[in-house]
Picture (cartoon, rainbow, N blue to C red):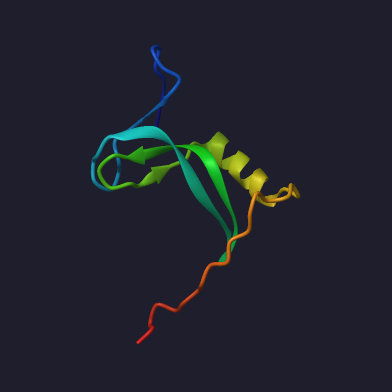
Length: 91
């Protein structure tokens, strides 16, 4: 996935999207961090490659490590969300 840094920009260069072939550009995203079935944290302002066509997100290994450290940290969250959880077979 990594191609390296561009000379004219700070943005990371990503390969094309593996799902749709679309162009992937570095953007700031919110990343859900899960441990098993549990949602531990939503980490925002994460630099990630985002496909311009389908929205698939790609996170570099060094960034993923920082997301994990942030999710497990004892730093007080900016806010806490209550999210409904529903089974797929809702009929």
